[in-house]
Image 1 (cartoon, rainbow, N blue to C red):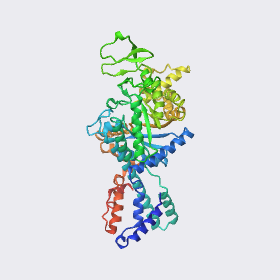
Image 2 (image 1 turned 180 degrees about the horizontal axis):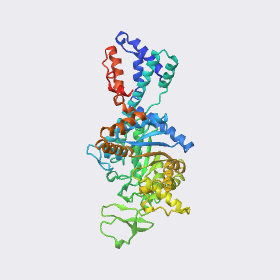
Image 3 (image 1 turned 90 degrees about the horizontal axis):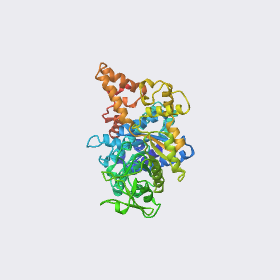
Image 4 (image 1 turned 45 degrees about the horizontal axis):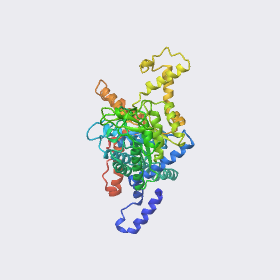
Length: 531
């Protein structure tokens, strides 16, 4: 990647080659525009971010404290603000990603209106959101670099060569807001060919990592709801290979696939797997079915029968036509799913669980790692869990096991606000605080994500604003609850004109028209009140 100075020199030579028609072109202005547009296509982004994830995975293998994190997004602005905030508070975007949640796409981005997480939204919406997220992240780069260019000009005007060199170094070593996105492709939105076509769109938009689940596409349910139906491994693995082919066709050779299993909570299957020889994938899949042994004379018209160890068994079939698995086999099926997914080319695993408990996740990953020692997990720190209740119960149970007095607490009522300032609550919160680190150390969780955080933060903040603004506080509800906090906390969006690109537009007007440019950022711009 060329430096800012090298770009200036390259354009100066190009200008000289093209002669007088290019006299008005300023090489440094071009170099600035190039710096502000480092990534020309979505594939540039996919290749760049895939490299980041691969390096992060290698670092995690050496040090389990170096796990990665992300928050779910439903709009480009939301993703942009996350990364701007991360850079502001931590000085780097290292090991911080974005997650694109299919749930939020369904609930917030479909033209049908709010939908449940059942793959009913438009297929192209996901790829469109990937593109939108990266458009906003690239704009964050352009805006921040624009500020550095202004500082550079000011240092030159002041004749401060030391400051000029310092700012020049910041420009040459600028860290982009563009980070990996783990993008949810649900169950593939159809057959393997449909999965491949949709994957290509998402990769071309910039996605370096695609997450796919082992549910039936046309019966897909949210991972934290009932009624989930899984598919035999052969069907799921065909879609894993479709994703790999899409990455390879587009030249993203190190693209990543996250194979998600919903088997822990999925008690149903739509089809009986094909068995080609005893002990193969299909045979193991079918071994988990809830069956009853029957004699030939006891069968009825339309019965589906399986030959097992020389005997006829009849899988239990529901009125819906679906077959059910034996109760209590969820964990065992998850382990088998994960082992076979890695064998089929998955890079990372995702086990959807009913509650967030370190020991449960560890138990399943221990089973996987007996076969694949380096197997790494992506874990959904879901808002579908009642974290407060779950961890207070975990703390309560730990106290009981340790013989500690719990007579002051009612386990069935631990969500009660009267417990908020208790020792038990503090113990539970301490467990929540270290949950991600504990999981990464104990269960090899490489990536932690929250699927729907901004869905909930938006609802919460709007509720608070509405209560104050439409109540007795009136305009003070906005000033005190929003704007003053933006100013005190240094939130860039308090200068919303700048955030929307107004100052960048002024820069470009000056490039194009010089002194004749009519700019918006003059003395009468009310945003100056926030300087």
